[in-house]
Image (cartoon, rainbow, N blue to C red; front, side):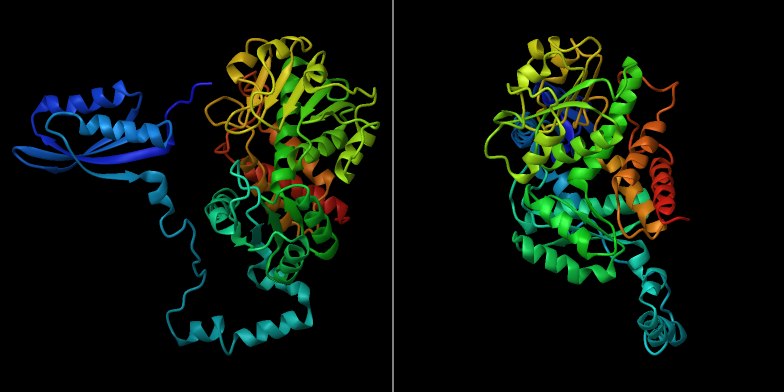
Length: 465
């Protein structure tokens, strides 16, 4: 599968060259010759004989970026002065900051915001601890907690390396739901230590977003924290993915005019995301699912099943299929992959039922080449931004937490997640719906507010309000 130039590998090259007109044209030609894309060209300094130009280019990867720089430097009369990686520049010093919401311009304001006035507010909360949700940042704050053990597709890279991702998550919370999120990277991968640390930090937050914690530890961490805390605990890698998949599948089924309760679903991947998707699809009414991992289909007669796989075996695969993934895909209506790249080929997709649906979500390389899948399937979705129908958690987690915080909910459950999925699906109107548009853009107007409203109503219904 060819990779196109991307802004995520964007560089700015400062060059000095002759000031005559043809020299600038040679820059464009050189970049195009090596497959790069110029996205901006700015004159930094002009003179009669020489000029300095900043050339901004999109590349495929770091090696391709270097090839672009080499091509520019090889032009006669061109001197390369400086190369800046725009992604690294964005991250310099971190991407988020804390700002005061109140002015501190004089003694009066200082006395109310801090001592002595603040003591009265503290005493009020001591008398009624629920007032912390009303009188502190708890009402609008989420902790984004990781141990760095499963960061994006990079694996166990540690808490320090996880911080740029957690900062990005916090920035997305603020941008799309006006929630103040705080990255917390823990230097431990011991379940007991993680649980205890989050437990003692929890009083300052209205919700916990677990992020990039590897399976199967993430299941235990989440389950124990949900038992211990009186605020929602949401593992986005599991439940955020599951909500978006359910929403996208609902709309894909609208396109092909099939029913969730009747379609046959083959899944690849029984880790954190796969299990959460499975449980939410089952809760929403799916009945015919076969889950495969590296050892083939999960079934009741398989040996050495851990507790998670045991649950899958007992709640799926009603016909007791014991073969491999390719066999499970044959005759299926839907394939959902959250596993590994290139586990299927076009010939496998061709064996599916007519008007099949493919969700190949492994990143950056999907379970099947999307271009190949399109030759046989009616609807194709991936986790990539360079194809239609991107399954991306950012579509849902800001709205989910906005709704939970607004309802002052003490937990999150499957009914709330189904409500979020239905709201997300409903954003796509009948006039917009099609094979290449089953899920809205993250920049769709009022997307987060629509999801938040549905979650808030579901939470309040549960509270009897």
